[in-house]
Image (cartoon, rainbow, N blue to C red; front, side, top):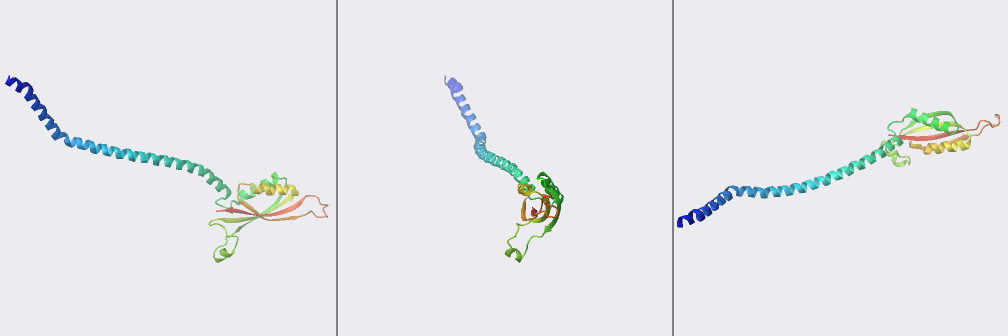
Length: 191
């Protein structure tokens, strides 16, 4: 019986304990590595959450940028990168025709911005990089049509200021026929 107790009870118990000690000895480092790996996984999850927030913020920024592109295009139409004299001529002549005025002539001149000490004393100081092309246009027609012409210039997409208006009534020699002659001086701006 002694032999049976040893054979069926003690020997299996010793073998199980020995295998447990061998497993613990060789696999203890693996269990430690699992703990470290779990720590790294937790850190990586935090980094992933931060990167997802960053991605979301970048997507919002890109969406805002796409909205601003429309504004930039509109500003580029308002203040062009060059004087665009032919475009101004066509636009002014078309506005005159749309308002039943006869376009009689135009003169363009580039105005140099005020720089240096004189800029401190001048009230006509422009923002950096902005330049002026001055337009002297002459049109002929009725006063009401001329007012509509000025409104059309005012609502035009190009940034322009009307700085001077002159008019001449028809002479008595012609019997007052043919409408009034108007002269308008306009500043158009460009980069």
